[in-house]
Image (cartoon, rainbow, N blue to C red; front, side, top):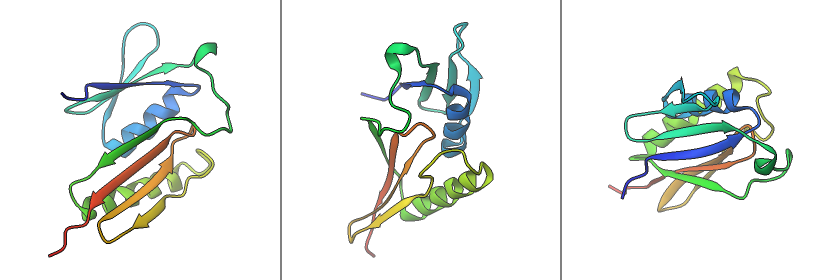
Length: 130
């Protein structure tokens, strides 16, 4: 089984698409005639639709979903962390709670962040002892 696409509903689909394209090094393109935006890479993509009333959630609330990604190495994880911090620096004021929350154990390094609409994202890597 393979992940093909994640569909996300957003109050600000363009802002979310730009955020995801930056984090994942993906490209942005229109997807259909209903205003959907596709943010895609080699293996899978995000489909972002404008949230309608039935998709709305509390603006300041915490989303009930969390996405987790495993990176190949701690170096890759740290590189991604620096890239995201730079994105937040450049976009000053993009979203509240921009700071990355790092956690390190003897087995794993990871960080958490929130996208502009409060979704939680976790990126981790297994620590390989040599």
